[in-house]
Length: 285
Ligand SMILES: [Zn+2]
Image (cartoon, rainbow, N blue to C red; front, top):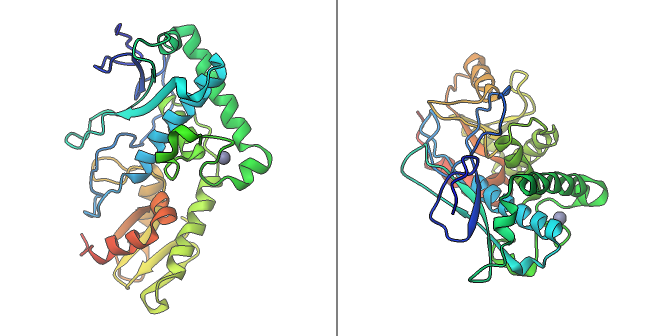
């Protein structure tokens, strides 16, 4: 395929890729976010779970495919989507969402979509669809995905991973637009409380607000636990401003417990028992 610096070059035949690239023009926003699928432990050594980011990439691919279907007026089975570059080695490994024609020789849909002008229309269509998903009853009731948004009968294998909000969040990071809402934080707080309420009361202490930074849980009187979004960096080399503020609050607290770990709210939602198992295995920094 022809080299396009906006998308990088890859060896996937008949596919167009959309990856961690910068949009044209100056960047005004410094995004301390992790978007690839490498797993870099947190600064305390607590493992980084990448399942939320993986779900986000599959969701973004499904969103782009739905937008392409809407833009080109074709059936979902005429375009395939997926992710590429699940790299585990280097922390700089890149991840891509791709679209490809399903026919061997291709109908040319994806080559057409790679045209700069058409690609801009595709981005406009994804933004319109995300706004529609966020609206009214669907925005209120659809927690991950349904047949009104990202699901169809051809992507059944990924239904449990698909989440339109994660797709939108990832897309806004990749495009360096700042339109994330406070919804995310409220949902994290509820998930953390639900998880803590299923652990014997003697083992956890729920704090509504840890030094002005929001809810946290003191687990077995040995480690603080707070929720984070799948893209929030919490490793030794890179830490989002919010994560640093929470760490400062822990350092200033009077309980004498200094270890702090961040658990992914995607994991709190989908696999809370795994969060408990990860904490049981964690010996501290
Ligand atoms: Zn839905």
